[in-house]
Length: 112
Length: 113
Image (cartoon, rainbow over all chains, first blue to last red; front, side):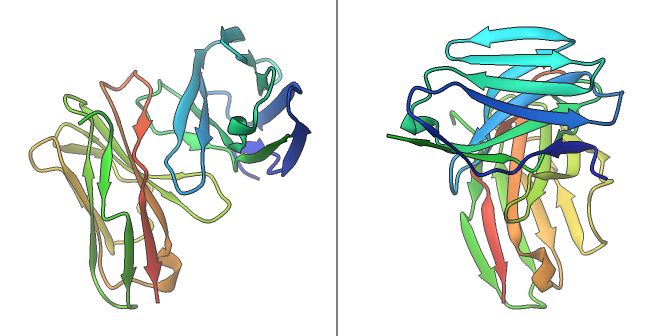
């Protein structure tokens, strides 16, 4: 069993929808949680970086961390076709500068 | 430069050849990481440098893989006697220091024939 589980999708939603992306993990040592967006043939781009349980909001994006359930989520409001990409959750035990463990990635398509 | 730069973007090699992949991190970033990303998978950790010191190489899949960062800036990942299973995208990431988030380059797509 992988340390980080993520539904690979694909997930298809209409423009304007609220998107929910999720990851579960098994390693209780993970303390830092990140969401990256990856377009085809490009490198991962950092979207959200959080520490500890709770919510963090940045524009249309909200990240949630529930350490007690070992569950993290990313919500995208008012989704746009430009949001179509693969979304990767990542986590580390001692900070973003330590080695990251990634989920498989969820492929998202936002349709007009 | 403004971001992490990797070269070449694409590399095709015959099985058994040696390859070298280059990473130019963001200027001033102390930490540098290499990851391997197979098709349809998330990146997997290979190795980590703090300045010129290689502090973690636990993810390197075999002794055919070797990485260096001799002056604490540019890094090279070398793969000797390439095998077909080495075909993947190799990503480099850097961070200002250990506790800061990592920023990725666009990777080198390696195909072994």
